[in-house]
Image (cartoon, rainbow, N blue to C red; front, side, top):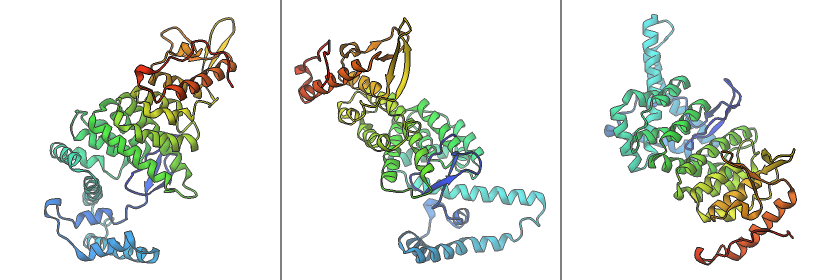
Length: 384
């Protein structure tokens, strides 16, 4: 099943009405969303409404009973006048019904657009405003109620570096539908400009913090797990972009997801490879925690019916060697000839020696300036 992304600014819970794991619906989006937008003036002309502000305050900060009562009052306040004006939609001629439904969909999108914009910092907001001015209909489609329209809109985003395209691509990684989020990640991988890198770094940080805080309770485990897939994919993009500024966030995600999530949902090996591409030595302590993972990852036939194995721990160790610019053969890896990228061991004894050798080298050299580090022994003789 494809995973679904989770908006960082709204509660989400699993919804499998369409495909297993393909949708996570936002629980904080009120039923009155579209109607509230209908009563709102454009951002530049918005008027303060003390009563609405009081209701929102109770919804967000009141106790459970106060929040529930305030929500009902808010829904009635914003929906009531519009519903009364419309009357029975079904009794209208077909053409009028179509017009009304189109407008209602636009109203719902309008609220999501404004909430999205409100969450942006000044640099991203300026980029977004410029993009929205140039592509107003596309922006509206990106926040449509129908996931199919959002999916099509994501695929039509012009991937122009340094523009609001990156802001919206990352915004759609937060989409409540898994197909839309996956398409947004594909666009992010294709664009991977500074705007995307900043946005994905925030995304990884936000969802990791949310899940670590216990954001998902009993019955919502699926939602938490599938988010790990999108965190994993986001980290791969950050690795390809050599995004050194994202390293602390990646390490935070690795520490949590890598320790608690099944390997099918968070690929520690791929995260290690991403960190190796970035090449930042700050990653070493976190990676060292995973070099003993013995789950087979890849296989290679080394001749005479001899099969070499690359474990998850081997990939992590190889990533550490790349960070410290140490050749894999130095620690006894069997390295396949190009074009294969395989490196592993034909015997667990060699694997244990390599792990021991690197740990000893790291303990003796990691804190030294690079020029003062001694190379590890080229022929490990044993492990403790």
